[in-house]
Length: 163
Image 1 (tube, rainbow, N blue to C red):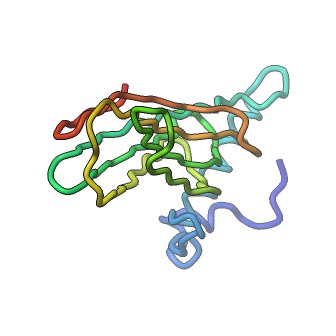
Image 2: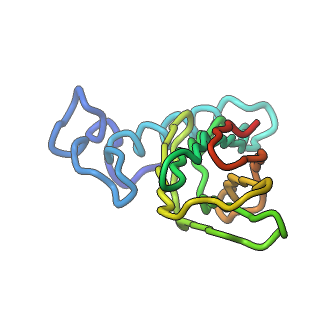
């Protein structure tokens, strides 16, 4: 594989100037260069010339409906061996099945092994009945083509963790 620049300059021990700047998604430019270098070595070591990579992710959420509202924390993790890009989604559905609150964040780029946590607050008390909590991550590379999703049931005054 041919690079038009010296990829070693992007590694922290060689050049802090090249390594340190953050990408728009919040990780160091040098970490991206290191992942590209690792991917090219995996590709070069494969016997059939194909890129040996796995694209996978997980998500889960912890939700509490105590006091005057709902608080939730959703964790998304790239468990694959290559970059993944996608949309993080969280939804709360009432006893009738209608959406009470939903939230999404698109164009989330994650490096292999990277984990992120998102927090949500909904300031209204829940009525009676069972509510469905759904946490999802639509992901893939170069475009989202897979979904990691989990859901759980929540009642007023309780808490739950999606599985």
